[in-house]
Amino acid sequence: MSELHNQLSFISPDPRIFQEKLNSLQTSELADRIRVLTIWPSAVRDAISTIDSKQEAESRGRLERSQTPTTPVFKGRHVRYLSRGREYVEELLHVHSSSKPLRSPTPTRKLFSPRNSSDSFANVSENPTQQAFQQAIRRLQHVEEFELNWYMDKGAEGEAWNFSLFPEIWQTIGPNLRKLTLDVQLFKMNDIVKYCYSLPKLEELLLTIHGDTSPVNHKHLLSIDSSDTSVPYLINKLRPTLRHLSIKTIGHQQLSLNFQLLESFPYLTSLSLNMPLDSEHLQDPSGFRRLLNAHPHITDLSIRYAKCCKDCTDDGFGLPSGKHMLYSDVSLPALRSLEVGLHTPVPPFGSINPLYNTIARIGPDFTSLTFRDRNLKLDEIKSMLRLFPTYRLKKLSLFAKHLSPQLIDHIAHTCPALSSLSLEVETVVRSESTQASPAYQEDDVDGFSQALFNYAVDIENDRWRYVTWLLSDISIMQWQFKVGHQHNWACMKAIARVIPSLRSFAGKGHMDVGANAPVKPEAVQQRSRFIEMGLDEGLYHDD
Image (cartoon, rainbow, N blue to C red; front, side, top):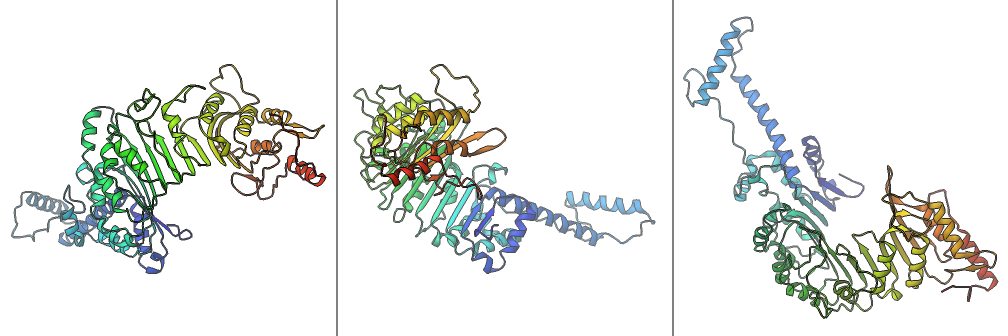
């Protein structure tokens, strides 16, 4: 539990941690502060089961001790052992001894009844730990964000999806909930949503739906999944208030029916789809097209092609005419931000690709573009940027195989109005090579910095190649061995030396690498001197 951030999570099956959190929620003062709640039902179930097993063992031990004669140890110890053995055999055979009181049988726990959730609801009072958990949930009256992760489960198959917390969850936190995140297996969705009656304030829904990930019987699995309507049922329930919708699928699922059953959402402005949108998984694309055309007010769109049963070299929707069955004639006039996944191969420079050609024209005025899911070589970056209206872009984000002076130069000339550039890079190099790159290259940050400065700046003649570029913020991220994923501050400082307009690193609004390490690039100082001298306009710019 994070009291500072008003967050509470039940994600550990450790009974000690679980019990401590239940105890801390006994007072409404702390419970009223919780705004973000995360639950893993399998962890909650395992924690409760462990606590109950321990309590039953202790109760059984106390009962045995109360029924055992207080015979001194030195008097006939073997008699006591034989007596206990006889009692145990009699209980197994259900034989009632007249000389000994019958030991009450161990009660059968009905915490999670297989397939029959009504049994578990009816017997809540028989389980004090589960009852305490539900009472704790009832105190969380002000939760605004709820995350449920239920795609990995160690329990038996019969009890994997019947968990009696959902009526309490929706009844308690539903009225004030604004953001809901579900990461679950498809066959559990119905048990989750069937008690979800009303979420009157919910604006953001993030779904990750897991199908069967086994590589066999694809067609059989698709036919089974095609009959499940729990996903569109939940989404349509949120029609009056939904503003942001994100759907990600993992594993084999048939998507056609889901899109066909979706209604229109009057306030939807953000849509994110991450799934295998190919002709095998989306056999009827009419529902998908209708979803896009029914929401011309979408401002943020993310379309990422997730890999499923095979490498997708072609989505199967291209037409000989150059049109695309999903995106041709689809227009989103309010679109401002577009994110595109590149699992399908990038077309060679100058070739026609119906998929990317039509996506690039889906909105007339978007100013933010992001490429995901592929590290791009320089020629691939040139090929993709050629398809999009880069002259009006304000923000650009992509994953580059090499960070080189040639890459910076191409982006500067292709995107003259760019104000924010975010790069994930694999390797930093002095220059792009015309030959095939080796499997592993070491970073050459110093070489990159010097080559970029030599190319972009002529100090003797006060000539700056990028003096008219409007870039104000840059972010460069890189994975480094034994370090992890972090910003490459050295490369950002090298770029700031040659771009006078830069004022911010990594969206921070300033160029301080550390608390005590302010960075004031030479280019900024030189630019200030130019302005004072009245030489800011008309400086050298080599096209």
